Image (cartoon, rainbow, N blue to C red; front, side):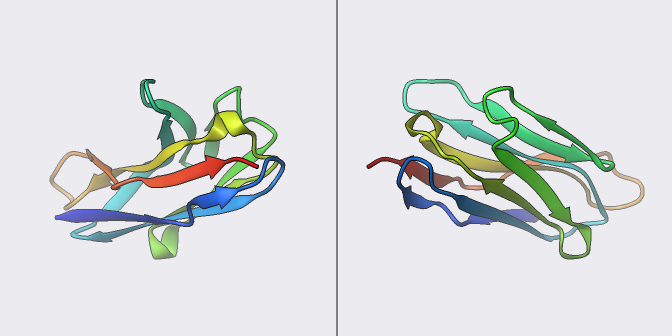
Length: 120
């Protein structure tokens, strides 16, 4: 099996910063894309940022404020969030496309989510 464990969420004031981490563990042969998604109350889950093959992609709403990075040796992805706004409040989920062996296809895995609340 593959597990994704997120950490780093919490309560922060508007304009503040947080850094999320997500570590993948278990039966992993290789990881392609890793990314972050978020879901606010009453809304659908949306893409925040992804990283694949050295290429990063950001939602327009976070571009210039958030930075995604990876430590491939540790199977870990990070999300540095600066200039946070109340509308960034959501549960943030980590996602990874993982190959468990050389002969299996990539499968998508999700973390359990971490709450980010931006409020004064």
